[in-house]
Image (cartoon, rainbow over all chains, first blue to last red; front, side):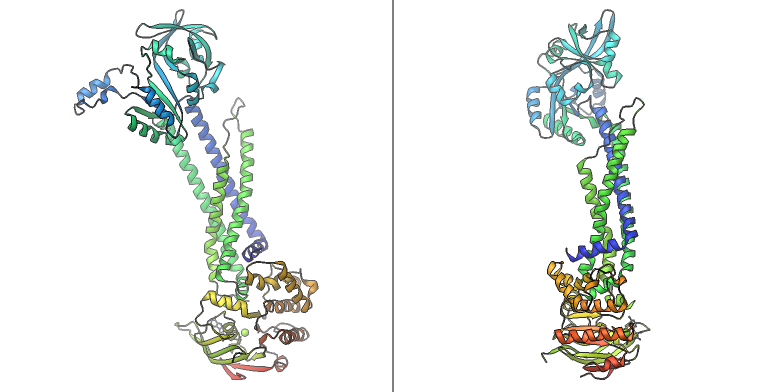
Length: 405
Length: 230
Ligand SMILES: Nc1ncnc2c1ncn2[C@@H]1O[C@H](COP(=O)(O)OP(=O)(O)O)[C@@H](O)[C@H]1O
Ligand SMILES: [Mg+2]
């Protein structure tokens, strides 16, 4: 075993109480950091899942008509008048080309064209205002995990089969296999069969959304061959806004990310992330101070030994490393213990903290990368915290240390 | 003078230089020690014996003057150079044993070897065990210093000082707090190693009987060598 490890281990073992204390400090620190981070990560994943489970990360639309280059933009009253005019349904120009290009863009993991517009759904005397969403079921499933929200049937809008929300089904009094009538402003109408029902967790959407095939929606909305928007899923959730801006710049289309449409959620997430970071920074600081102060005391107590080692030919560098290694060892052992405690806390949390109906509120996320980074930070903290005491030890005057018996 | 293991020329040492309490402790020491010599350093308390030993031991720097160890001039060496030279050529025995309390007797003896080579290996163990055997402590190898008597601790310290077979061993009152009988044993042990290995010894002692049994006596009074410089 190298000299430095041999001596560092022995010094730690000799300083029992102190060693236990700093190790406990690191253990608690690591446990707190890992547990809090897992908790917040889990909570955020849960929030994001709830919000974005039924929503695309980025929605691409045709540009607003007002944004025509020939228009005199300085003329405010014209702009106001143009804006106030209801936007008529328009298709994305040459959407197939745009779609093909998006599908190949790195960072985009799913793309789904959609034909959507307002309509009335009726059965007997009951009539409700709805939004028709004409999709390719296969593509749409890759963008939104709607399949998870199905309470009856499957998500298979095709031909004249439609999938509606549970609220609409209740309002119209329809059951699976029943037919409903969809009518649009242009006096176009069609009979569709309800083959599935969903509950996306939002009453309003459960009441308004009617999924049909693209072809049916194109007919009803008078957009032959067109699509009104393209929904995208990105791999990097928080990169959605940047991706959206890039797409808008490249295509001249409107691209809106979830970060724009859910500004409040985003700022809540950011605030959580910031507070976790604050906790992590302060815990790390406290642990570092603990390690440093205990090692400073240890250097004073070990003056004589350090003097003897120097007299026997141990260089300043060697003495320095002996104390750096002590900081590192304490950090490594504390990290392992702390991680184990955090993992235990997480499983306790998942077991006992439940909502009123007994279902799990959310699961704290223990990612391997969390352990990895925490260990690295702990190790760096241990070694850095040991720097000051280690320097003092190395600079100790051996003659003085030996004389002071 | 190739057989000179130690040579001091006009060595001065002052403490607290540049302050109101500046005091010169050594006033121009000239000294020679030949290889294999067994020399006593005597003098009243406060005369500067420990200071001189620390300077020779490269633990302190002289304020002025030249120190040569094994022919190597040390004034120009930096801390790393001093440390290396110290580890290679010098063995220390102190009055208060100064063993490492966290390590066993055997580990204390092999520590200079571990420091010299950077790591511990099996061959060192044998050498250290042989040394412990030579000082009559084969049975105490695994004991911690606290479990050993003063005389035993000092014998471990002697074994440790000889681990790297240094050409010069410095001993500061090695028998100072041992009873006469144990002190004689320890002294005899140093003499034996001196004869067997040829290491030179410079021993600070207050015991005139022991001093009389050395090859030569250097006497220090008030920071000056008054007898035995050569
Ligand atoms: N670090 C120091 N600072 C100031 N004075 C010192 C220091 N070390 C020793 N002295 C002084 O130097 C003188 C010689 O001390 P020392 O070498 O220990 O003598 P001895 O070993 O012969 O008893 C004493 O007066 C002592 O007080
Ligand atoms: Mg003294």
